[in-house]
Amino acid sequence: MTVSVHALTGRRRAARGGPGPGLVRLSVCAATIAACVPYLILKTAWLSGSTAGWNDVEAARGSGLYVANAVTMGMDALAVLVALAFTFRWGRRIPAWLVLTPIWIAAGLLAPIVLAVPLGALLQALFSSEPLTGGDAAIQGWVYGVVYTGFTVQGLGLLTAFVLYAKDRWADVFTIRTRDVPKGATHALQVLLARAASVFAAGFAAVHLFWAFGGTAGLRGDEIVHRNAAQQLADGVWGALALAGAAALLAIVQRAGRPERLALPLAVAWVGAAATFAWSLYALLVTLGRPGLLASDSTAAANLTALGGLLAGLLMGVAGAVLLTERQSASPTASSTP
Image (cartoon, rainbow, N blue to C red; front, side, top):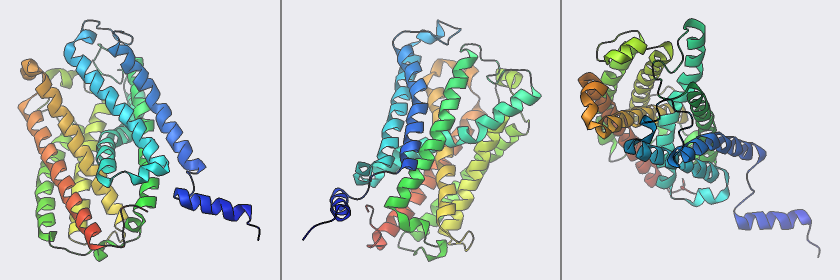
């Protein structure tokens, strides 16, 4: 008996775990990695002692900045690995927490950039003669263009790759209705965490929306002088994401009928929680990393707002993790691997 080529190929693919990535996923992966390359080159140059792109050469040689450059370069290199994991079959064998943690942080850092930077640049070009970077003359303008263009493409690429990956690995999440998610033993805890998070998120959002609409209380003097439309838009995006994330999480834990599919409120809660947590943590780390400059580099209002955002994002993240873990445990047919 002869065996057809198609049948033999099918058996080999099955033995290897299914067909390889299609053209769309390979293209998304390639674009994401390409967007990381300029940032990695720039950081490598700075870590090697180059002052390319700097106006203030002395500032470029600070030891604290060296550590920050090393950390951010490592984060961008991790984005390359994550993009590869989302594209190729071996990524589906990685433990779920090891995949979800870096993409949660990446979504939080990059989603506000994707939402705010392109529109902010357009608004700045149309309505202001001041450069997008405001009064920061330490770094040359082209650096911001290269970095934030890359971040925007990275954000779009990683989020697209993650959706395609999640549809393969957790397909049931995209079909189940919110009201059909079972209420398990931790449901009361989920509701408590979501409601507590919403309080902190509301305070965080109120301050950022106040700044977005022109308020200046709580800002440093130099921030007020050099504030532009792009920075106000960024504040508006952070505030809106915090409110949307908290509202979506409440809709999930209370099993609201709208929106019907779990995937939509889950995505909003995911991005809102991540953005609120990640950018608040970043702001606090910057402040704590320069203790000698606290009086001039930050205000009590800004620090308290960042702390509130950190707590809001963390509580939302814990509530979501508890909900998804309990649902996975209660659904033996919904395997974490295909």
